[in-house]
Image (cartoon, rainbow, N blue to C red; front, side, top):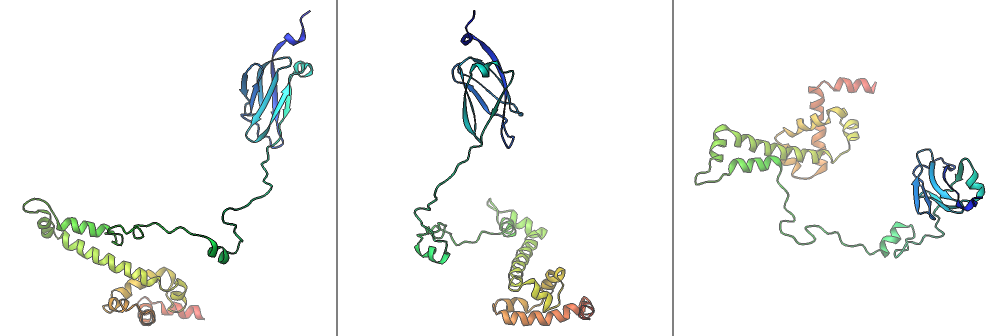
Length: 251
């Protein structure tokens, strides 16, 4: 008679859990040093002898150990329930800050590292503003190599240098206009000046081409600039026939 402990067979089974996510669970026979992984449904097959030890493990589950008893050995299919692994913290202590939750108080106790920038490090040209694309193109058009630089000559004849100068000036003026526009919320243009939201940019251009606009902006006086906008808005609405629309809205 052959002793039971000499029996060896391919054990087939299936792991399962409450949430059903059991794919790629490791199944290890630590006695024979053999291993496999479950398929997407949790099914597996592994060679084992009677009294061998099977270990089931996955990141999301607690490790489970199972001895192949005679009862397990004789089962047609083995079903293994895996329990979810929960990581619990008894207490959380924020160190070394010991924050209270009150931002005002916490800022007084925190030692904040200085912000490291080119200016704080004292690097050369830290405060130099990088040239724009148009400015770089203008510099290239006005410079050139060799004994007799050809770029300035060619670009001067073709009018490219003049065109680039005008573009640089226009871009600077546009950037300044955008900054002035941001002084006031869009809702104020709509409510006080009666300028529709989709017409604000066009209104700003209308103000920009006024000869007095640049000198007025240079004063940085927001009250004077706003008075200027109020006067220009009346003309702008009339030129664009927006006054009638405004009256209709009031009614």
